[in-house]
Every structure is written in structure tokens, then in C-alpha cells.
Image 1 (cartoon, rainbow, N blue to C red):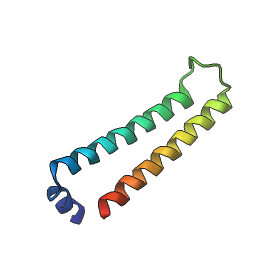
Image 2 (cartoon, helix red, strand yellow):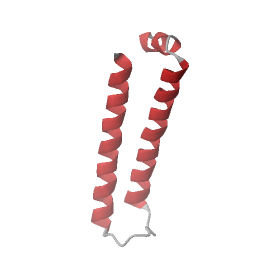
Image 3 (cartoon, rainbow, N blue to C red):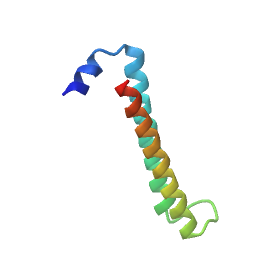
Image 4 (cartoon, rainbow, N blue to C red):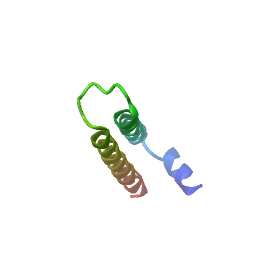
Length: 74
């Protein structure tokens, strides 16, 4: 519940940047899913390459989410 109180005390700019960070996180997860599992992918990449790229995008999205949450705790 403490994080809920912290959200209410933030300025509109901080709340906007937090929501924007969450949207970017969701975008990277969606991009990872599309790269990894889209059968008609427009680039000529092997299935293993696409899955590897998708996994790297998931790791990057996780890193961004970690930094977003860590920034919110400060």
C-alpha cells in the first residue's frame, strides 16, 4: 500500500513519465513476442535467430522495468 501513497504524492510530470515508462515496457514485450513467434516475419532470419532476438528483447524490457521501479523507490 505504501507505493500507492507515493503515486498520489507525485507531480503530474513524474506520473506521466512513469506511465510512459510502463508503455515502453509493454511495447518491448509486444515487440519481443512478434519477433519470436510471427511466422511471416519480413526479414530473412532463422527461427533460432528470431527466438534469440525475442529473448534479448524480453531481457531488455525486464531491465527497463527494473530501472523504472528502482527510480520510483528513490
